[in-house]
Length: 515
Image (cartoon, rainbow, N blue to C red; front, side, top):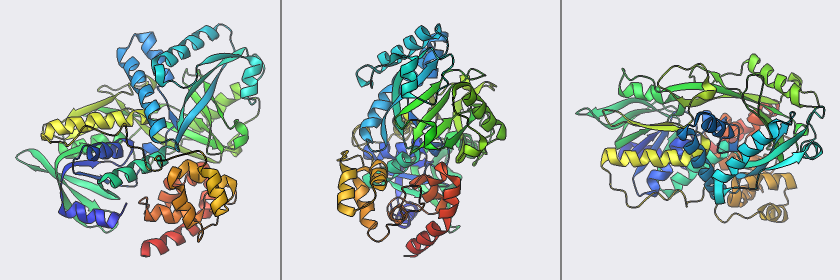
């Protein structure tokens, strides 16, 4: 991605589609549109994945909780959501094999009467996935459950059910989507904010934007505008129509990160019922342990903060299931993200609101795509672009190809990349494994830069200085937080290590951006 060149294109070219929002759905829509041969632009007011799309539970899943609601309420909509998400899970595991992989999860059972309930539910989950399923769900004894997840509380454990879902690196996948869209011919720019929607005879013809780095404002001409701003979509809808009624309710989900000793490296834990009947996940992720999430009504704001009460809630749930003590001192990092929940009515129980997505078209032709979840971003994008084509009477050259286009690094991927890197570049094994899992087949490009920039950003983490250079040159990073939070994941894993690395990352970026 070359931001300077793309800014010039935004100023001078006319586009079929302008996408507002650089999260999963927005970058997915840009890739979908350009794959159909449409002239496509995208702007993001902050960085790619800077909001909700970098703050997920890191699971590619159909939604076990939504399946339970579908059965209990005979809700065809929730049933369809799970079925579609399981299809998308399979697709993403193929498109981004470096960023996504299957993960075993144990559901511990402390009452024998719960066994048939959970086993039947997870067998239904397998059945819905059909041929696209991963390994089959199965019952395990108490001893087997403890062997798989030794940190579980032994007292009263009757057994467990093991099932399988996908796990991924959300921010890296988002950046890869943006990079792939750029390579397919889309024009993208982060740190560009829409400040006004432009109309002619009551219909949208473009947007006035501001480059947040220079302060310059300029118009972008487009036949159709797609609003893919996640929890913030109502703000764009208000630019279009100040009287537009809100279509979203948001909930906040917080996560905490612990040391790797709190989970085995290849097995997660699904706590099926917390004190208020919600679901909690404990997962191995990036050599650490990720725990989340809460699900509380929330105000929509750019940087939602972690509440002490939410951290206390998570630690309290772990006490019921863990044999080892987890305290506030064990927390290495924490963050909060917003979930966009489609709702035309006020609701207090956000856990029961729909996660299905919605495509809305305003009188002026603004296409809003919102709701949904990470796993279904590709289908959301496809639906949003298809609607935009109808609204703008556009003439795509071909159908969407996003089910076939590998994400950047997924092409020619093979699991031997790590050993090849170690042999060719003499990097530490953990660094090579990390480069393979973050950059896939493009890890060699980063490793080549390591010949000049081999130093680690933190002694206890596998990130190296070469990644800072690559992030600026190739992946559109503009600020230190872009590198520490979304090109690498250091600030999400270890807040203290991230703070210590800030000065060096800043120095490297200043040198590189000056060039």
